[in-house]
Length: 251
Image (cartoon, rainbow, N blue to C red):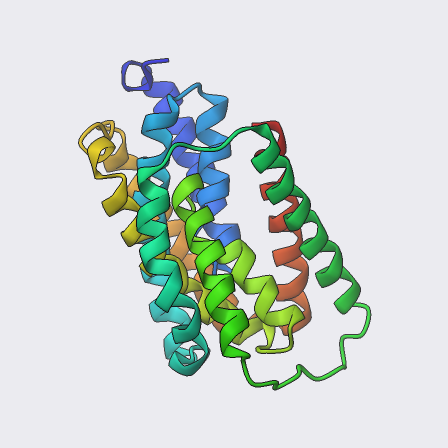
């Protein structure tokens, strides 16, 4: 489909992108899974979808990074063990082709499992978040895997990092959101550099979609960083994970 020739489709997709950015940014995510799902509905080619999703990811994650950092929800100490390995492998993943159905099923299953675990955690809302120190070898390995997947799929990897930080007891929901936002920004930048050959093919409609994502991201990150309770953040993230899993399995 030549979406550039269909003004109505361009505007509708801008609305969907706004909604995805609003929902995802409230939990420190950038919305790539939502953008990919929306673009798939309109039949955009995969070699266009991935760079567009990464470009929108960079816009929204940059906004979310600033919002959550200003709210005191970011930790360099927590971030660095993951990005040391994730950035180079996101660059590698950006150069590779998207894997087959088996890969999508595995990632989709992981997202559903993480959503289930987060929902279970909300059953004990008054349990304080654990403050365990990050186990560096595990973080380095996780960063490698998540970074590679981020590059391959055209996402920033935050949908896997956020739940990992919470479920491992390394961060509470709000800090996990802040760290995830910066993680997504760095990995999306690396991935789009790896996918640079397709960046020149971005459709002109990006000039409308990027502001839509920015506005949605600004609103979502503002409320998520300062006004949403930890339990609410977990529940929203669980919903986001399920939506991403559905997209991943049935794309």
